[in-house]
Length: 534
Image 1 (tube, rainbow, N blue to C red):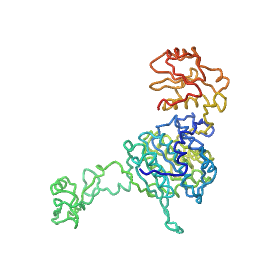
Image 2: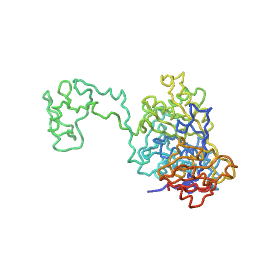
Image 3: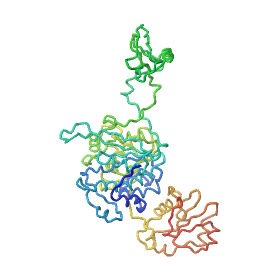
């Protein structure tokens, strides 16, 4: 398979492994919930690369659908490359606006996207799917980097979305009216799209002029272009008229099969019995929904003008550049999610994804959850504020559901300091007990950390099929300097069972014989955080 080469690739293709885990700090005053939780709907303010890494202990392999709307790299967006990769060339990129004259703008965009896409893939379920909005500037590069990360065999579609209706008269060559949504699955053999609901307009094509007891129907052409001699014959209508297939065509069915269909009242010759025959297709016999297609017009999925109006109605005087319409995200959710799915948007912008999730939950009684990540300073006053208002209700909205409020809740978090294990015993940037437990449990087992099972008094942080895990730790430098795994503490762990005990502590005062007798594997903080998952 051809591979995509770009400046900086060597330094970013494994950079996601080097990104440090960070604390995720709850912000009660910015949340809209009775109980702050990482298992609530989430809005996280901070660098999305860091946030995605911080989400791994709780959400690795849990997300059903990802939608992202990254910078399109048009040269006019004023986005800045800010990943602190250890490379002189890339250090020089830091903090500088990427404009259209920048000869390395495509390299910078790919260096920004690659580690994020790799972490997004880790967060996806095996039957998960990712939708990425993009335009002509980077769609070709995006396809190649996605082929490399997700595998070209997992490519599903490139959807063309009609972003605007009016012609741009001052366009130099062509008036640009479409953007793209690139779609990949994590495993194509495990993901299947939901059928889209039929519209009233589509169902209006069905009627029942002959009062058929099977209900309303529409008619289809009986002729086909694929020629076979046994389906090229004259048909006599009930009125006695002789009808032949159009020149170069033949009938869809053999004489014998056609007669069976006539006897079953599935061939329509018109009210007077002298029309060219057509096959009856009953609404009751077609699929309950429609297979999604790759052309999404504005009457189906909204456009940018609709999105701007939505933001104005909800946020009033607050402006946001290039929002996406709720109907676009709603269509993605209809195609890609179940009622209990987790949806992630790591370029959250104005918060459209959250509104679409809440609206669909209200419509079908679902319990979908959203995770939004926004790095910009407007995360609270625009992203979260939109979600607050749609939950509580927007008095000026024409839509009754939005006016009354969509309901729901969310917990707001800020990214905290990195969990620097090498500096724990020096007392620098000490994380909370639960934050360190979350990090250690995931790093040691590769499995989701469940905070509800933590028993801090007996230092228990969770278990899997092989291990019980214990953490002797407090965010107190004097405690860390004086704490060790002793015989008394080993005995206090409780009854010995078949599972081994993985014990993390600053040091130990037990010999190998006692460790074996209590089925303990000792891991010294901060040096022996390792991956059992391999």
